[in-house]
Length: 151
Image 1 (cartoon, one colour):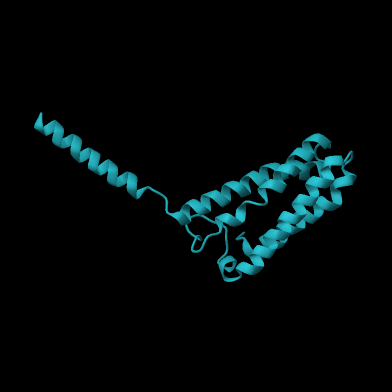
Image 2: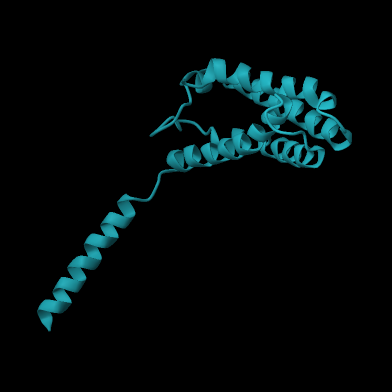
Protein backbone atom coordinates (compact mmCIF):
# COMPACT_ATOMS: atom_id res chain seq x y z
CA UNK A 1 0.00 0.00 0.00
CA UNK A 2 2.90 2.33 0.84
CA UNK A 3 4.40 1.65 -2.58
CA UNK A 4 1.14 2.64 -4.32
CA UNK A 5 0.93 5.81 -2.25
CA UNK A 6 4.55 6.66 -3.03
CA UNK A 7 4.00 6.05 -6.75
CA UNK A 8 0.84 8.13 -6.70
CA UNK A 9 2.62 11.01 -4.92
CA UNK A 10 5.55 10.82 -7.32
CA UNK A 11 3.24 10.86 -10.31
CA UNK A 12 1.31 13.80 -8.88
CA UNK A 13 4.52 15.78 -8.33
CA UNK A 14 5.77 15.02 -11.84
CA UNK A 15 2.41 15.86 -13.38
CA UNK A 16 2.26 19.10 -11.41
CA UNK A 17 5.74 20.08 -12.54
CA UNK A 18 4.90 19.29 -16.16
CA UNK A 19 1.64 21.19 -15.95
CA UNK A 20 3.30 24.26 -14.48
CA UNK A 21 6.06 24.10 -17.11
CA UNK A 22 3.41 24.05 -19.81
CA UNK A 23 1.74 27.23 -18.50
CA UNK A 24 2.16 29.88 -21.19
CA UNK A 25 3.98 33.08 -20.37
CA UNK A 26 2.21 36.44 -20.69
CA UNK A 27 4.10 36.99 -23.96
CA UNK A 28 2.96 33.61 -25.32
CA UNK A 29 -0.64 34.38 -24.33
CA UNK A 30 -0.36 37.76 -26.09
CA UNK A 31 0.84 36.06 -29.28
CA UNK A 32 -2.06 33.58 -29.14
CA UNK A 33 -4.54 36.37 -28.48
CA UNK A 34 -3.48 38.57 -31.37
CA UNK A 35 -3.20 35.62 -33.75
CA UNK A 36 -6.73 34.57 -32.82
CA UNK A 37 -8.03 38.07 -33.50
CA UNK A 38 -6.22 38.27 -36.84
CA UNK A 39 -7.61 34.85 -37.83
CA UNK A 40 -11.13 36.07 -37.02
CA UNK A 41 -10.52 39.19 -39.12
CA UNK A 42 -9.33 37.07 -42.04
CA UNK A 43 -12.30 34.72 -41.62
CA UNK A 44 -14.65 37.66 -42.14
CA UNK A 45 -12.55 39.64 -44.62
CA UNK A 46 -12.13 36.75 -47.06
CA UNK A 47 -15.79 36.39 -48.08
CA UNK A 48 -16.07 40.17 -48.48
CA UNK A 49 -13.04 40.09 -50.79
CA UNK A 50 -14.69 37.29 -52.74
CA UNK A 51 -17.80 39.43 -53.20
CA UNK A 52 -15.81 42.51 -54.22
CA UNK A 53 -13.79 40.45 -56.74
CA UNK A 54 -16.95 38.88 -58.15
CA UNK A 55 -15.85 35.39 -57.12
CA UNK A 56 -19.01 34.90 -55.07
CA UNK A 57 -22.37 36.64 -55.43
CA UNK A 58 -22.78 39.88 -53.53
CA UNK A 59 -25.03 39.47 -50.49
CA UNK A 60 -25.59 42.89 -48.91
CA UNK A 61 -26.74 41.48 -45.58
CA UNK A 62 -23.81 39.06 -45.26
CA UNK A 63 -21.35 41.75 -46.36
CA UNK A 64 -22.69 44.21 -43.78
CA UNK A 65 -22.48 41.60 -41.02
CA UNK A 66 -18.88 40.73 -41.89
CA UNK A 67 -17.93 44.40 -42.19
CA UNK A 68 -19.42 45.06 -38.75
CA UNK A 69 -17.43 42.17 -37.32
CA UNK A 70 -14.18 43.38 -38.89
CA UNK A 71 -14.84 46.89 -37.57
CA UNK A 72 -15.19 45.51 -34.05
CA UNK A 73 -12.28 43.11 -34.37
CA UNK A 74 -10.04 45.91 -35.65
CA UNK A 75 -10.19 47.46 -32.17
CA UNK A 76 -8.66 44.39 -30.51
CA UNK A 77 -5.22 43.37 -31.86
CA UNK A 78 -3.12 46.17 -30.41
CA UNK A 79 -3.78 44.86 -26.91
CA UNK A 80 -1.82 41.73 -27.83
CA UNK A 81 1.36 43.59 -28.74
CA UNK A 82 2.77 43.80 -25.25
CA UNK A 83 6.51 44.40 -24.71
CA UNK A 84 8.74 41.44 -25.48
CA UNK A 85 5.96 39.41 -27.10
CA UNK A 86 7.81 38.44 -30.24
CA UNK A 87 8.12 34.86 -29.02
CA UNK A 88 7.32 31.45 -30.41
CA UNK A 89 5.71 31.11 -33.79
CA UNK A 90 4.83 34.67 -34.81
CA UNK A 91 4.97 36.68 -38.01
CA UNK A 92 5.44 39.94 -36.11
CA UNK A 93 8.66 41.73 -37.04
CA UNK A 94 10.81 43.28 -34.29
CA UNK A 95 10.22 46.65 -35.96
CA UNK A 96 6.80 46.75 -34.30
CA UNK A 97 8.37 47.32 -30.89
CA UNK A 98 11.08 49.58 -32.31
CA UNK A 99 8.47 51.81 -34.01
CA UNK A 100 5.46 51.37 -31.74
CA UNK A 101 4.06 54.86 -32.46
CA UNK A 102 4.01 54.19 -36.21
CA UNK A 103 2.57 50.72 -35.65
CA UNK A 104 -0.19 52.19 -33.46
CA UNK A 105 -0.93 54.78 -36.15
CA UNK A 106 -1.26 52.07 -38.79
CA UNK A 107 -3.53 50.04 -36.52
CA UNK A 108 -5.63 53.18 -35.92
CA UNK A 109 -5.93 53.72 -39.68
CA UNK A 110 -7.12 50.14 -40.06
CA UNK A 111 -9.66 50.64 -37.27
CA UNK A 112 -10.92 53.91 -38.78
CA UNK A 113 -11.24 52.53 -42.30
CA UNK A 114 -12.91 49.32 -41.08
CA UNK A 115 -15.42 51.42 -39.12
CA UNK A 116 -16.20 53.43 -42.26
CA UNK A 117 -16.68 50.22 -44.23
CA UNK A 118 -19.19 48.96 -41.68
CA UNK A 119 -21.13 52.24 -42.00
CA UNK A 120 -21.10 52.15 -45.81
CA UNK A 121 -22.12 48.49 -45.83
CA UNK A 122 -25.22 49.15 -43.69
CA UNK A 123 -26.98 50.83 -46.61
CA UNK A 124 -25.19 49.26 -49.58
CA UNK A 125 -27.40 47.57 -52.11
CA UNK A 126 -24.65 46.68 -54.58
CA UNK A 127 -21.02 45.72 -54.56
CA UNK A 128 -20.18 49.01 -56.27
CA UNK A 129 -21.31 50.87 -53.15
CA UNK A 130 -18.67 49.15 -50.98
CA UNK A 131 -15.74 48.67 -53.37
CA UNK A 132 -13.92 51.94 -52.73
CA UNK A 133 -14.10 51.72 -48.94
CA UNK A 134 -13.26 48.02 -49.00
CA UNK A 135 -10.15 48.96 -50.97
CA UNK A 136 -9.16 51.46 -48.27
CA UNK A 137 -9.45 48.79 -45.60
CA UNK A 138 -7.39 46.40 -47.71
CA UNK A 139 -4.76 49.09 -48.22
CA UNK A 140 -4.60 49.74 -44.47
CA UNK A 141 -3.96 46.04 -43.95
CA UNK A 142 -1.30 45.98 -46.66
CA UNK A 143 0.50 49.07 -45.33
CA UNK A 144 0.91 47.42 -41.94
CA UNK A 145 1.73 43.96 -43.30
CA UNK A 146 4.39 45.31 -45.66
CA UNK A 147 6.27 46.96 -42.83
CA UNK A 148 5.54 44.83 -39.78
CA UNK A 149 4.65 41.27 -40.83
CA UNK A 150 7.06 38.52 -41.87
CA UNK A 151 6.18 36.83 -45.12
